[in-house]
Length: 198
Image (cartoon, rainbow, N blue to C red):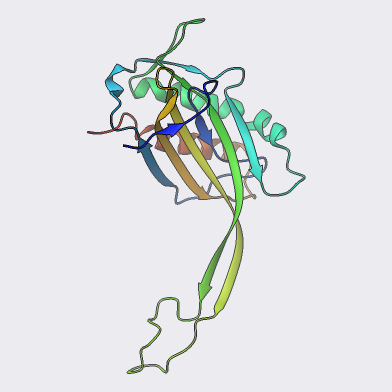
């Protein structure tokens, strides 16, 4: 059993991590967390979170402009989720109606690092072949990482009941069309994990 609590105003969240000028690179890692006690068969309809369907969070520099990234990529995220949910058995609630769950998205980018050490693939003590050595960093690379997270929140429980996340490295050298295609791919991979298998 795994439940994430959220404020009452946030009923469902789709978190998608990317940002202005960036796109998720190959090797997406997809993970899912869920409330195992929840009966997902009861979910038929969904609505977007209000007043906005999502938010962009950039954790790189003080000069980041989340609003600019939101304007560039929000329609891609909204379209991908809207197209993906019917394939998973969920339909949008009628205009003005409350859905069984609510959905919102976040685009998030962070800075990380990749490092390798001398003897990275060799055991520290191979005295029968090589003399022993002290590990030392031989390569350090600063990278940007992005994630796509989809939270489904039950308005009855006021809690996240399902969370899917795609994480990957970001390449800044892509065009907006390539970025949008990568976001759609990440959303598809996340939504492919719904509904949870028993």
